[in-house]
Length: 236
Image 1 (cartoon, rainbow, N blue to C red):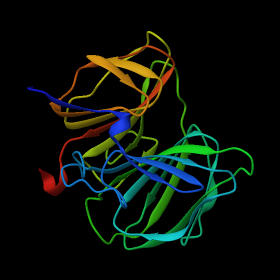
Image 2: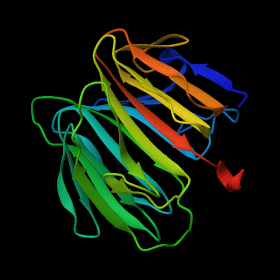
Image 3: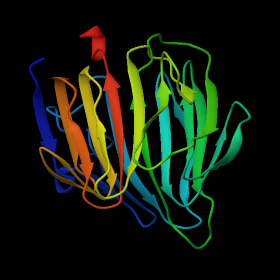
């Protein structure tokens, strides 16, 4: 299929900074707004966050959003109005379906070390569903792409969108994975350096339209997050 690719560099992302948070936004979020950069396919948020020790997001609301959190370093404590509480750490995938409405907080679980995580939002297929929560350990092997969240098929955690799936790959130098074919792909370099036609570095992203089959090769120890989406907003 014909392919369109849009490379987005880490330095071009929006940034929110406070005395306890550095949040880098791949798409418009909060005070960062670019009308030409609101989403890709079904993916509305891809925030790369570092939270200082003993700090975090106080209780706040969400509605009608599938929120997937992937921790890179440290530990993130979660509490919500459904009665769920726990700590999310590297290798554990978390999904919160906000549905008809939910309150939650996210705090660094350490008093001495920062926590670094990527939080991603996609719209659900249906609005007003009952809120829900899921987390699960992921077994990752170097050089393999693992599906950690999907609306259909075999995945560690389920999201309420049949056209979306999230894959992760941890790669050692020389390891390679092949991208799935999809209407939209979003490839985010969470850490390291990879080659995908050109070099991509930590925080860079490649946005594909009508694509798939490309090879991603690690140039150094790397971790990449890949959203596979077979529709866009409004079913486009």
